[in-house]
Image 1 (cartoon, rainbow, N blue to C red):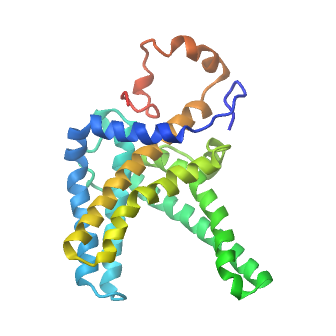
Image 2: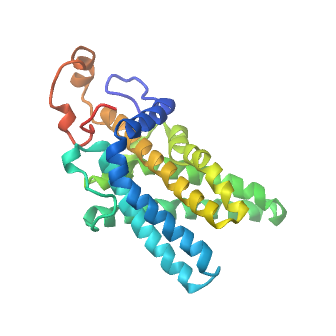
Image 3: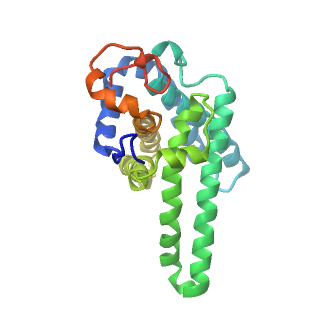
Length: 269
């Protein structure tokens, strides 16, 4: 994507990581009050499922649904926490479902299904050409474009959490030129942050399994905040007019009402 002045808008991934961590640390009291109960509950649901429900038992599906519904509430709360003024936050990440949560779940499923279908089509097509013995290569070839569209389309999720009218076409345009960076923000970096906790599951110790689940949701919170900041950064260029782009260097230190706009966050991070 290019700015109104024709400049390339390159997402500063490193800045997004440090800004997300700094924001959560600066607002740690609000973070603890808003998200700690949700993280403890989500970790308990996952831990209970792994410890007491046999694999392939129908009860696993029930716990999966509960975890999914709670995770959507957790995610939308994280996006609002990052992008909206404090008076518009939920008091707790566990709250009543609203239209935004349904929209968020449907959009996430839409993106996931599109990525899965693309992966499957490419992998099967390559296996038919190369043979089943090269299935790992075909899987890698299918995963790359699937992750690419997953990353680019995910920039729409914070906007859905805010209740704004948006579309996949808008997300594609907003993330233009930053596909690989979006994959880093949405997939690669969150996986790297979560990996140490996921390794604890290999020890198969009940206490460590709960620690692993708890730590995974901590890193998920960081990832959600990072995605929200990424959305805000790209939106500032996507919706900026040429006149605003010219005036911005002279006015960015002045007091105005931009901090109260939904897309701007309402805080200094």
